[in-house]
Length: 127
Image 1 (tube, one colour):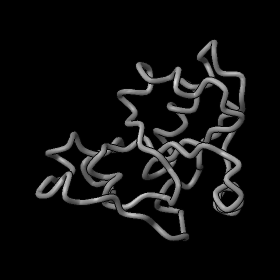
Image 2 (cartoon, rainbow, N blue to C red):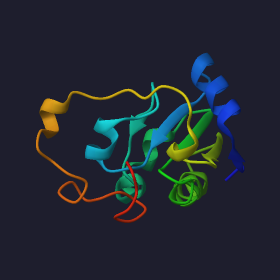
Image 3 (cartoon, one colour):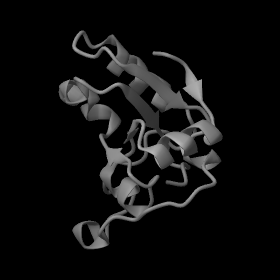
Image 4 (cartoon, one colour):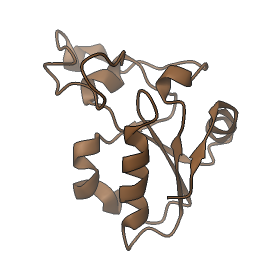
């Protein structure tokens, strides 16, 4: 892992499309609101999906409070096939003051955080 970044640096990376932003929350939480341009790779699936990051120059992991994203960044960085830079978004979505996108809610109509596996950081996480 190559460290953590703050809101201003993430905003710049998102604006310039200079990084692959990975939101590690559950699919339902992701659908309810995520950083524009980010993609959902839930934390429990990162080990199985880590080869998806082959060839990426820069990856930023995101979670609700900036704690679980550190673990995700370490997992990606430890993968032999990954040669890029991976950082965690330190403040988490709680510290993101930019816009949030919502995914098509018809795919998850009626689901809750508990029904879709919960958040990555406990039952009180807002996302």
